[in-house]
View 1: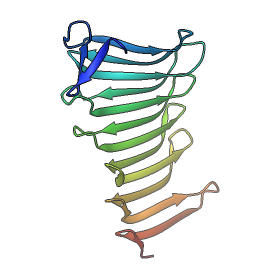
View 2 (view 1 turned 90 degrees about the vertical axis):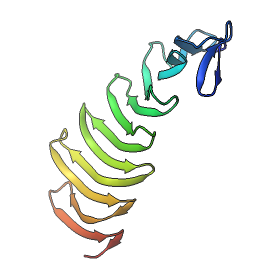
View 3 (view 1 turned 135 degrees about the vertical axis):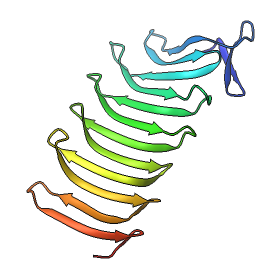
View 4 (view 1 turned 60 degrees about the horizontal axis):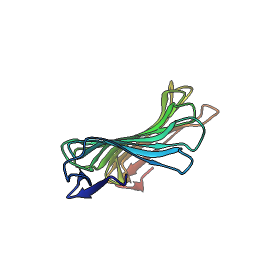
Amino acid sequence: MKEVYIDNDLVYKNADDGLFTGIVQSKRKNGHLVYEEEYEKGIILSSNLYYNGKEKRVSNKAIYNPNKPLVLSKEYSYDLKYKIFEITTYNDDGLKILYEQFTNGKVSYSCQYLGKKKHGLELGYRDGGEKMTFRCEYINGKKNGTEYCLNEKGIETKKEYLNGKKIK
């Protein structure tokens, strides 16, 4: 990390001021790898944040848009068994468009976004992603349409919303 610098969203080598290609790392004094970034011709491609432990395990991985330096494309979060439990997807401008949570490798929650606001479908699942327990549509952060819920006892409820206001 100390051998490179950033200028206008590109990373350069301190030694010769050339665009950097390779991996930079941040380690503790005991040698434990904490964080690393991968670059190609000065553009960040990905970064990994590691768990603090004896093994080298990624806790968070970020993938960047290679055509727009420092703009996120996807973020992955891993549990201690290196299974994905969250994925956040971004559009070409770096705005969040989808957030998903996983249980045992299956989608347990999914929500579409437009930036910071829910925009599209929000879905909840149980039984390994087999049974939908929640469904609601959002427009610009406000509930719009039918909200469907299925509780633990199998009882369904439905509520109607229009522009964020409950109508029945």
